[in-house]
Amino acid sequence: MRIMAIRLLGSIVFLLLVSVAFDSPVSARAKALHARSTQSSIGRVWHVTEYGGWTATWTRRGDSMVFDGLWLNGSQKVTGVLTMTVQGSTVRIQSRQQTNGYDVDYEGTLAQDGKSIRGSLWVAGAGNRQNWQATIDTAGMSIQPPPPPPPPPAQSSIGRVWQVTEYGGWTATWTRRGDSMVFDGLWLNGSQKVTGVLTMTVQGSTVRIQSRQQTNGYDVDYEGTLAQNGKSIRGSLWVAGAGNRQNWQATIDTAGMSIQPPQPPAAADVFLGDWLGAGHCADPAGELGTFNILFWREGGQILWTDWNVEAISPAEFADEGTRYRLRATGRRPDGALKSYTWYVDKDVKAPLMYGELVHSAYPNCRLVVYKGLTHWLGCHATTSPPAKRPRVE
Image 1 (cartoon, rainbow, N blue to C red):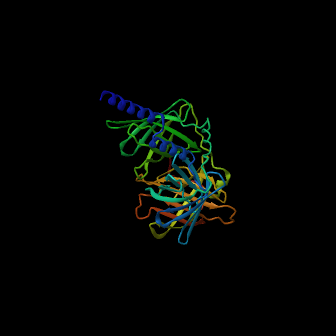
Image 2: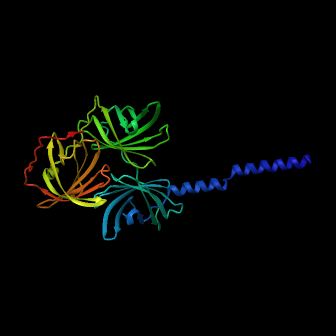
Image 3: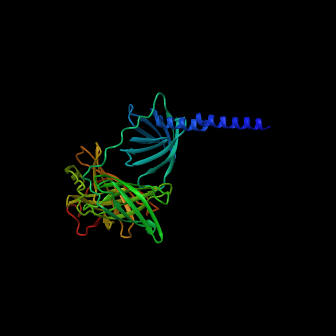
């Protein structure tokens, strides 16, 4: 009996050694998944289904991470340009230059075979995330992620200390690590305390921030627009998995540093002056109205009013190839934030201005679409500041 017990024990030890020496089926599968994730295929063509009856075809440009998108919904047609980034089985996509004027961000998880994906999308300024899915033509393709982007310009000034106010009574102090783009964050709300690490990127006057390693377990993304003097910022934040965006703002200690958001070029002067025209409610569909918007230059900025705002951000100019764009936010007297986008096509003798206004504070009209505003020859026909200016933030 004793000999049999020793032999049995020896067999068990041998099996244990074998299991250590060789991969188990579980670990082998994990390694295979890891190998697959680093070579995850994004294929040539994606066939996409989105909310509201929209379908799309995204076609890859060569071996790049850029796709050309075509969206259809009945008689409606939209085109745009999509840029993908891949980390393991997670794919993040930015859709820009859409002919309907929207910016859309997608995130999804690839299926194990790389032939399908599901996830959520967010239309800038439109509130809740929505679901999307796609099938992928992966014939002969494997992902080659691009090299990491270059670091932000060394002279981009983001101050030393940010004093932050967020929704729900939270306040925070973000302290910069030397001259890096990394900040240490401390959030307080009564007896509650949270710490985390923030990483910033700056493009012109737009700042994007990722807050990670928070002690409450949340990941938070911030986006905001710097004031012209570089001493304050306002924008929106999104807590991963928590639904709607929320507002935030901060004052910035810029001691010994100078922020110089770029001044709009001369081409932006096409927007200057007084515009009058029609617009209609597009979400939900509603009645037609008349709109009057005035733009002028002041202190190297393009300022504006639609006569219904108490405070504004300076308009940000962009050249989109076939048209010019301005973007800005405005705040009503009750503090509610509105987001504006305006366009003027190039090479037009008598240009018309069009665009949209997004405002979640108006549930009966969350999206206004401007149609064919013209330079008005009425009593406000001027490029000079109005007598009562909105406050610049």
